[in-house]
Amino acid sequence: MSRSTRAAGRRSAPRANRSRHRTPRARTASKAIGLTLLSALVPGSGLVMGGRKKLGAFVLTISIGLLLLAAYVGLTRRDSVLAFAVSPRQLLIATAAVVGLGACWIWIVVASHKLLRPVSMTYTGRLAGSMFVGLLCFAIAVPTTVAAQTVMAQRDLVGSVFQSEGDSKSATRPKVDKKDPWAKTPRLNLLLLGADDGVGREGTRTDTVIVASIDTKTGDTSLISLSRNWMRMPFPADSPLHKVYPDGFWDPNMGNVEQPEYYLDAMYENIPRQHPGILGQTDNEGADAVKLAAGAALGLDIDYYMQVNLAGFRQIIDAVGGITVNVNYRVPIGGDYGAGPGSNSERKPSGYIEPGPDQKLDGYHALWFARGRYGLSDPSRQERQRCTIHALVNSVQPATLVTKYQQIASAGKQLLRTDIPQEILPAFIELGLKVKGANVTNVDLDKSKNFPTGKNPDYEAMQALVQKAINPKSKPVASTPSTTATKKPSSGTTTTKKPKSPKPTVTPGATENLNDACAYNPNETGGN
Image (tube, rainbow, N blue to C red; front, side, top):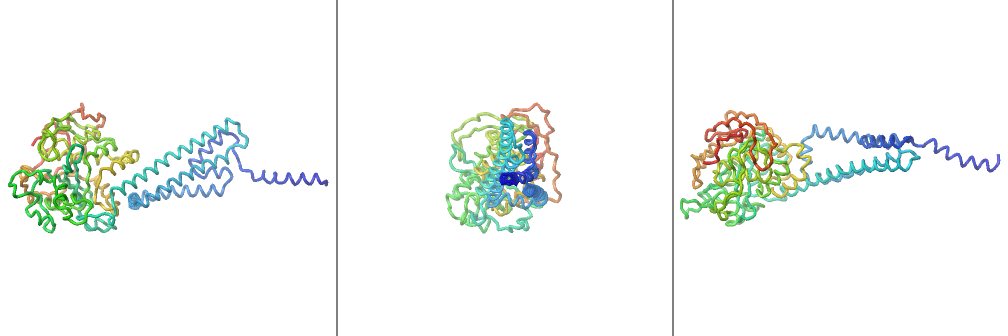
């Protein structure tokens, strides 16, 4: 055999060897595009079909394993999911994991297409394949980015609003068992404060003071509204404030007259200003003072507070897409009597929310539905505030949380303050889920008998009513929620629906289910 023949044989041998291990490829560009799509839907399948069987099998196994693990955790380990969702450290790890998985997914799609596309392709076929792969990568990158941003928004919210027990100070917060926070707490008493510190007002006043007493086993909740103009608010006997105000929060030297600077709504600002540091180390002395007074007035131990800036409340309503309420009488937008703390010169309302059932209100109108008081009584305002909370709880749906969570988190970060420690947030979320599906009632404190004016309320009588309401011999029957027609604009215009039956009358001092309390009743006037 000649030298040239042997050389030719050696040159041809490697090519023959490579041909035996050549990866299988699609014969057409369209088929390659279809297989690339399959590789995106089932990560790893494209690598297997492209000849990288070991790598493809590994990726496929990991993909299926992650899906099964996610399904198992989501269905059987809800406690772990909730704990994960409120841990800033774990949320940061989750963000990195989401970005990493998205990048790996994109690499799998690109690598699969390279293995599957024909060796010989026209310029049009190559361009079509590249454009399709680009679209797939974009389709993966967008939800990955949104998911990462949502996780970071949750982390920002948790870190901004809820401080860990070691990083925050409170003069009134109880010590709890972090493993089982409600073990020794059959009822959780939560103080809800609405701070009216908007533009044009001096200082901060808590115009809204509501205590939510929650059965930690069932989620059944009693809402108790305190009037903003109550005087002589008591303090527990062991509180330093009791020594300063042994007969309650008022000035005896002024006589038995209305003392606006000693109203309940003035306590949040005036006590820290007059007695700074009297309660010891705390991040919010005003809230702690109101917690002590509200608890003493109602005969309850208030565990935590949640403070909402009413000026930013509308952001939350807008973020969840509005709320649906029944408007039983004209509710003023704006207006000021020109007298009393925080008032400006007298002015008429700029408009009204007109009566009508099932009205969809945006944040602006929902805020005035809860706050409007020009020409109306305080009890009617308190009832509308409870109905606003009730409507907000019922309006938050899973789909809304998924699509608008970043807006909700951003709004919540700006308007919420609380002494609820970060460590027990999972338990609070579990309890919140119970409350959403439980019986929510209003406790009537009998204004005509117990506080016809705010000068000298009968707190002992109110305490008896509260105890009777939260420890009933038989539970009140929950009424069926009215169906909501959310097809009206947010301007508060009336609907053309047939009026519903008037809601039943309530005996003073009794409890009333909020579905009944917030029902449409055109006979109401909003007066005393």
